[in-house]
Image (cartoon, rainbow, N blue to C red; front, side, top):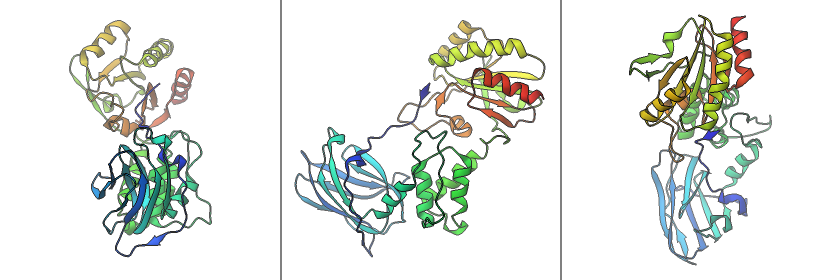
Length: 337
């Protein structure tokens, strides 16, 4: 399975974090002293990438950023080439210890003033698979609206009900942080990925350069396969699907493979090699590189890896997602019944 999920160096694994916060009436300010081998930079950016704070770090010298009033939320803290998402408030934050820019995993840093961030860590799911993980808060959890949306952002699970429950905890007039806006959009997207939801429409190109949309197949059961020519597991799954297609083919059933190749010639070469008897479409956006955000179709259908298959009923509603082999057959038969 090919994945586009980013992997960040989690340099907090070796942090020794104190738990006493100092409220800073004039905003967030970061101070400290780091043992580093060469000068580097500390930056704080919001979720839009806007620079909030910055200062130069010199070996074994104290540093202090300016004070800035912020919206309590998730921010990206960058030290050198390493970055991590942290929940910051209008507190003074102190950082001391050793930072190795070449080998960040060897760093040993101590933070003071990020108590709320540590609280959020307690509620993150132990399951790290976003497709199976859920988020639940105990009845006695006391989180501010900003912390609730921050938790959703940090957890980043694909479970609609977890995200919807967290969003419902935030009053409409307090959904103004960037993570809250992200959560509102996240719930909207995930609402189309639950069983029974109407599947998002799309329009892609077929081998004759004609535009084909999902809505063109309303009234038929659709097996929708997202793939690419360079993806070995995708092509193996296609051959598995061919057996099911030949067994169950009828006027009420259509298979559609959408290729995420960024090269049309390679896609067409795959068509010539596989000679599959169903609808073949090409999303010229391609499959994102590891440092790129998911494509529009990935976001709409909620997948980060291929092959990815869904089954859609005659009314255009989702009846199965992320299925393979016999699961596809079962979903088709269920739709017919």
